[in-house]
Length: 201
Length: 201
Image 1 (cartoon, rainbow over the protein chains, first blue to last red):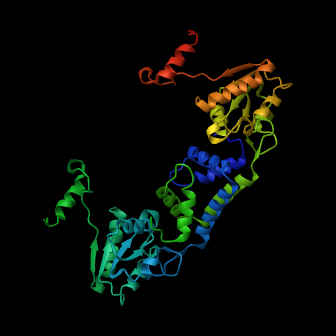
Image 2 (image 1 turned 90 degrees about the vertical axis):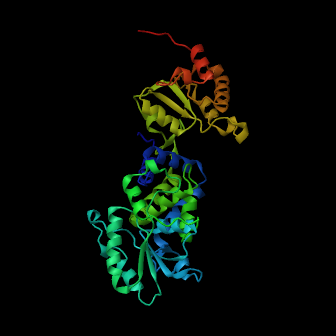
C-alpha cells in the first residue's frame, strides 16, 4: 500500500500488529480516528498507557486487579472451599459470565509448553501449592483447555497436589449443548460415553 | 461484562468505540497488549497521538500529507490536465492502487448531505473552483459514490464548473468485473445498457 503520509503509515503499522487486524482494517481505524475529535484519540491513547503501566495483579489468585486483593478473593460471598485453576484472565471472565461458579480462582498465567519454552517455573504453580495448606480448600477444579499443553499442566498440578489430600476434579468434556451427535469428532464422542452421567428425571 | 479491573474496563470502552470493534474483540486486543512488552503499547499510543496532532493536509488537493504539498501534487510524472474529485483519502488510496490513473486529485472531505447538515460550504468546493483557472486542467473526473448524496454533490460541482469550459466526466457505472448479469440489480443493469461502450476487438 502507498501511504500519503509517514504518520499514517506508522499508525497503520502499529495498529495492524494487534491480533486479527490487517493493514486494511488498521487503515480504516486510523482514518476514523483522524475524523474524530482530537480528544477521543487522547483518551484512547492514555487509557491504553494507563492500562499497561498502572495494572496490578491480585497477590492471591494472580488475576488482573486494581487492588492488592481482587474483588473475587476479597468477597465474603464466595465459597472458599473451591478453587478453580485457569490459564488466564479471559477464562476467569468466561466462567464468571456463566454464573455457575461461586468459588475462588487461581490464574496460572499460561500452560506448560516445552515448544514455547514455558516450564512449570514460569507459571504460578509454586504459589498455588503454597496456597493450599491452611486455606480450607477442599476441592481443586482444573479448567484448562483440552490440548496437549493443558493436559500436561493438569497432570503436573495433580501430582504436585497429591500430598495435600484434597479432591482434584476437571471440567466435563462432552458434546456441546446444541451440538449434533453425528458431527462430533470421535475423540469427544468417545470421551462423552466414558464419562457418562446419571440421567435423572 | 464484569471486568476484574477499572483500567481494563476503561481501555475496553475506548477501544470498542472504534468502528467494527465490539466489547469482546476490544477485550481480546486489550489483553493482548497486556501480554506484550510495555514498549509496544507506548509505540502504539504515541503513533496514534502523533497522527492526530502532527498530521497536515496538502494545500492544493487537501489530501493527507506530511508536507505543505503532497507527493502526488509535487510529482512531475503526473498528468496536470486531469483532475479527479473524490470524497476522502481512502478513495485516493483505492484509485492509486489501480495504477490506472496518472492525473491529480481534489479531496472534498465529504459529500453534500442535508440530513447530516453538510452543505457545499463545509466541503472544499470553493478551493476547487479557485484551482481551475490558470491550472491547465482540461478534464475533471467525478469519482463519487453512486448514492443520493454523491449524485447531489456531482450535480452541484458540475454546475459550478460550467463557466470554465472544461470537460466534466464521471467514472463508469456498470456490472462489476466477475459479476453475474442475472444477479445484478435492475438500476445498475439498466444504467449499464444506457452507457454501453463500443466493443473493440
